[in-house]
Image (tube, helix red, strand yellow):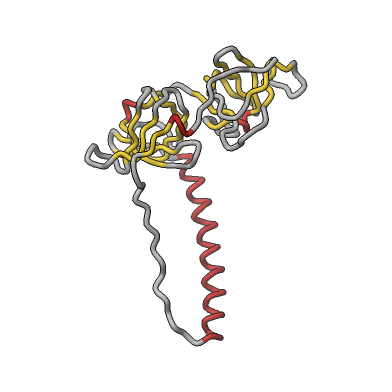
Length: 209
């Protein structure tokens, strides 16, 4: 049996102009070559070391930080409305970067500022959304990072359990629960257990009640 469901694609997100990204380059410095090589090597080692510690610090902060709302940051939520404007900053004066046109899509809250939430989607794009446009209802996309292939949906949370359906990339599902690496999901004409790592909308080691 093959599970059928509406697929999520770029059609669910409408761009609204350039995101205004800029990249700064360090000013060139002339220095004698032997000394330059030594300083460059030492600088590279220091930079890598700092990046490593920064990454560890960020991971630890993400696991313990609570936002102004009292909820943990980061965390997954879903879009409440069929039409959600994403802005480049946390005010109505900031321009709209793009608009989502499908309710229920999962997004990750990575920052909070007053009543605004900075979100990240399955493509890694980030922007600001007003909090009332988001829902605590948990949803997930099946392997949105893949272009083809299927993921088995099982009757029980075991790799040898009966096959219920096979879900293609970008299938949108409701998340009922997750435990021990498996999530109970459901959608249009399908329900069952899926490998948790095959979903965008839950963390790999997260428990969802």
